[in-house]
Length: 311
Ligand code: HPA
Image 1 (tube, rainbow, N blue to C red):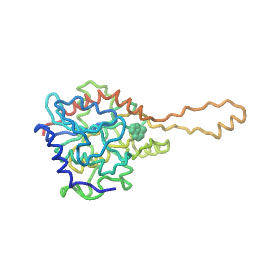
Image 2: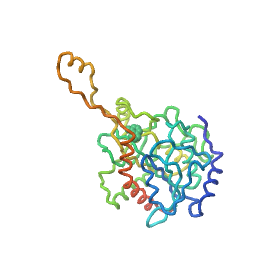
Image 3: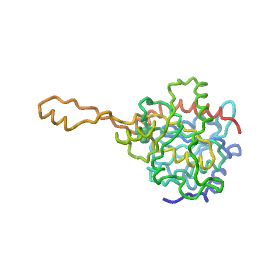
Image 4: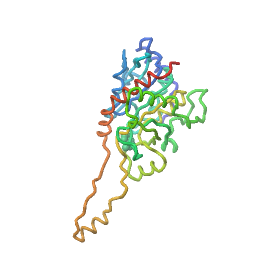
């Protein structure tokens, strides 16, 4: 895979800024909209959309349910915050290199964002997390990252970037606080929220039962195919990170395997066999929950941005 493409960032930033009015040239907060969550942009004012097709270095997002543009605009009620939202993101499973996946994050950092709110749709591994819950991510498990697929392999972002970036504190406690303060102000039920660890996998396959059990045993509450490369690139660039993971499905982890051996034996003995229902995850249910919870997520993100202290 090609290495980082830091050299082209200034020209990409220039190309984007040339399409923006002065007030939007230096966005303060970045937002990444996950599956079915692109409606987040609807709460922005004076929106200018720049298509990924028109941005040098940006790839095309190929996943159904994802759009493909940067939306610049203002958000907030008590303060007017210039923001930029990524409508659609790039995933390694689409065949993109990790440097392509994180390129937009590096460009957003170069545009001057101080904080980024990253949303995603993810599967719940923790049985106490119900579908529709917003999980405020406080830690991650990057299986590909531990094993050679780390987006920070190669030259560092700048001479100021440490070679060995600490990420034990990647998820800003100050930003996480704002989620709960916003939820309280909006009277969203407290039970709609949880905190947890997000396991990043490359996908595109959903997990087998053994894989789901493995990740759960390793301490993960959620599993998904995005976000972590973006978090690492944002932290490398000194951007504050908040991740909201919407539980769109339970990962299928049956307590007991179906025994074909026992079924056939029973059948041979002339006994009636009760066949278990085999559940599978579908992209449609993931998108459905994303849409169903879209308005809540939109209001929440808007309120969080309103609560971010002006710097
Ligand atoms: N596994 C991995 N990624 C996902 C899932 C899942 O169950 N749901 C949404 N994204």
